[in-house]
Length: 75
Image 1 (cartoon, rainbow, N blue to C red):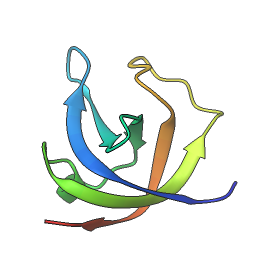
Image 2 (image 1 turned 135 degrees about the vertical axis):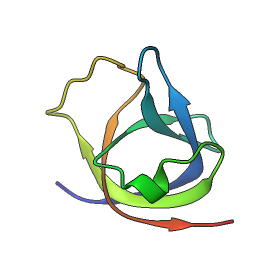
Image 3 (image 1 turned 135 degrees about the horizontal axis):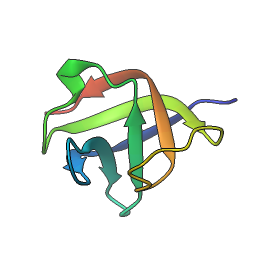
């Protein structure tokens, strides 16, 4: 699996306990997998490098699952 880097805004999505997501400037939504605590802050602008996991199903089903490998806070 190859890594991708995406930039956008972290948002809390879904129902119940919810899930953390990255929404890109282009409107794509990635569900974040294994996101560190410091990444999970609403409205934070970040650049995330990770792997899109086609083999993972989630309850939220808000978009592709992005397994976080590293990130940079842009603000």
